[in-house]
Length: 510
Image 1: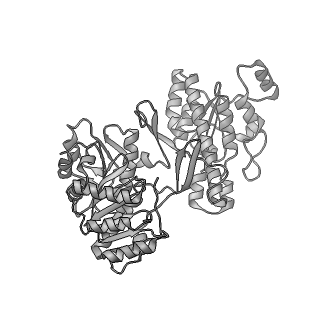
Image 2: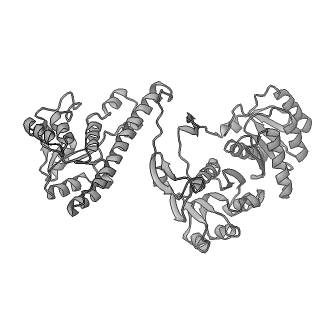
Image 3: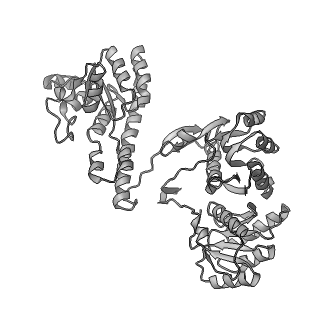
């Protein structure tokens, strides 16, 4: 039996090779892998002894050779293949252990295009694909995490077709992801990220019990190990819908840095938000906005949930709590609640990934775009259009309202008073309806909007929303501006003594 080992990720490769050697495998290897194996007492054969041809062109060609690919690809169930292999002097290669040049690490480290080009693997993917194609006879190993199971299967005589088939699938995923990464990088470098093909590649973290509904399958996939490294399940199982709600809630709660922010979300929409000196006070204020919708909702806590906060949260049914961290004492408070689900990021604060791109499925394809980002300076540098200037507290409230609005479904209007959201209208077909619905809900909840700041993520097309806000006692408004009726909106703000600011940036979220 013969194994070919050539890896860039050398974790565990020595132990794997020793295990194969004990099982009677002859080891063939290349370059740095060969040196490491020899240094650790493994009787490896250097690749050019097999190819009968030296490495050439500064290592660009070393395994692209019929003695290698013939050894991998010839079919063991066809006598004609076996006869031809014998005639040509091609020895069978029964196991291929290959992972590829570190292209991702290279593009993260340098912009030197020559170095980047040299870190595009050619021979590696060819060997992986050859071995995967011939999985009926050849074991292909691309993941160091598979070393131990493969050795155990070989020791126990369980080198089954099912195992080899699973490794084959993983191998093709490996090369497909690698080529996708290269193509996407080249398009980012030369085509502003929008080439003729766009590849979206994620790694599965876990299956969800089902998708949005029980008749749909679902799973969580991640970019760059974001969830594997950060997301921790403490209690319960995250559903498909939980995960989308968690993402929305965390984006809002984490948008304020180290502030003690709490966001409550129901069906993807915020129904409560507040920033306070303590997380307990922040949660208490956030809940006031819409305690009816909060029932069975998702709460994102930008900090540590302690026993006292847990006891307060435990007063109503919450389906999900996601926090920077949830103490053991807090977890004990929730232990008796069977349906609650607890997750944390294992840190003092929530985390969001810095995805550069965003996409959305539509019938027959998907739309792809640069990721939207809401920046502090959008409010700090906003242009005052009114005669009245906002107070310091109103500017803080405008900042909160603007960020929450930008991260909420359009059409959206958000009202914030003294650091807490007091009304929100979202996902409406008209902006004036969003404003009015928000105020109606606030009235039903007994919340006083007088003195609040208001934000709209897109411009007001008419002055009617300003008139409604003034009637409710709103004192400051922020919006992008850009309507053909901006002058009417500005005039309305001045008539009502409202401070009005234009950011010049729109944040539609559909």
